[in-house]
Amino acid sequence: MMVGTGYGILQPIIYDKTTYIAPDSTKATQYLSYVLSGNYIAITIAPFFISLMQLIFNIHTNSFPYFLNGGIMILLAIVSLIGYRSYVFSVDVSYYYKKIIPQ
Image 1: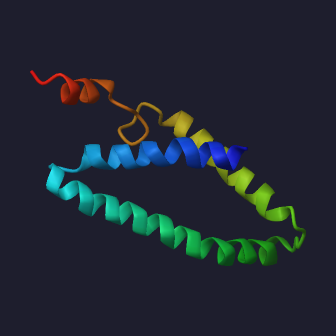
Image 2: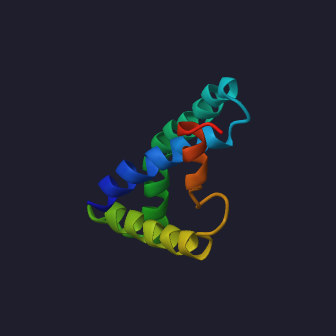
């Protein structure tokens, strides 16, 4: 449930934030390609990272990847709560109104 929530909520926010950061609409596609490349690299590296963590902690159970990912999610949640007012974690609603209602 936590993985689905993270993927279902955070991915669209990340994609939307990427288009917001892009200087103009012609660069948005390029910036999104960087984000998607990073996403697919992470998907490729994840099994190797989990195997490495299993070797480091010497825990080889089937539930270890879930607890490891849960711990990483809790750590990232704490980081995001500490910096929730920073540019990276905030969502500027006025930007959306500017797009919908031009001034």
